[in-house]
Image 1 (cartoon, rainbow, N blue to C red):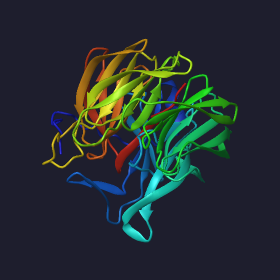
Image 2: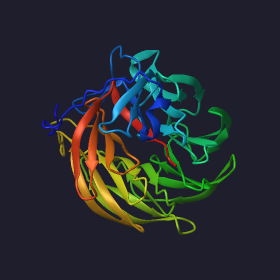
Image 3: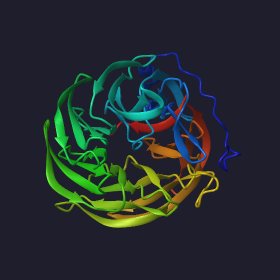
Image 4: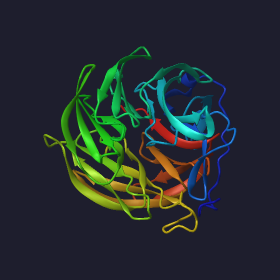
Length: 388
């Protein structure tokens, strides 16, 4: 399925045998979590029969074209937001959540899982350092910019897991109960100063505000309501604004992204912007001047369904204060998931579960264009880069 991208050149990306550290200053690591457990059949997500292991692909985003530099087997999940990968600020390790697994009692079903995998990015090839337990439905994961604390949103039990971090070693430091098992904490994101975190809750349509002091994380009990099923969230590196996607009802209706003003105390939602069907992933440019959104655009739906399209979209908005202005968009692969930026703000990677590939896009400040694709061994379901 070409998804309207028949002219796109697919890049042949050989694995680099040399250690990651030899890549030098040009290196910027993007880590993609690839789910092999589920497939899309005429608009239905079903468990694959005898699937191969899930994989984690490490990509050097600091070169042109981006290159695959390693891969390792580890649990991944398309269930949950594509914020299921967090990369340490020094790019020495990555955290990957696995929200669901195949039911050992019934291989045709998937059930919630609690896996949090720590991957050594300094090894060549990369290796799994350890596998920890977060909470059931472990989904969105973030590391603070100091590299001392990690939080995991557990969608199937209404909690956030807390881990302290030292020398790439994670130590469980408790759980924070936000709601019941239907509240659906989906992603948790730190503000740049590490003193606040926001949690999207797609089950009860809330965005919770957490207070962070060292390893002490407290629910302030303040929350916002933006739209239906808040999901992925990104906070500007300036710490003044957050943008989140809202899943909506997945019925072919248009959905919205929401803007949160973080300068206000308490923060509040100040805008909702219609973007199309099922906005999924969101990522801020490194300088905070733009935000990119992946939009599924009806592409995972049955071909006979209302609103079906054979491609997804990436849309870029310029940010000025809390005002978002559309700048550019491009057609990308179907069943889109996460998106990340290169450090220079000129290259983006956008995941396509259906195509089992990651589109490479170029952005010049005015136009957005697909220039290639990175093939991965599985459906790319989550992606992350270091936040500095």
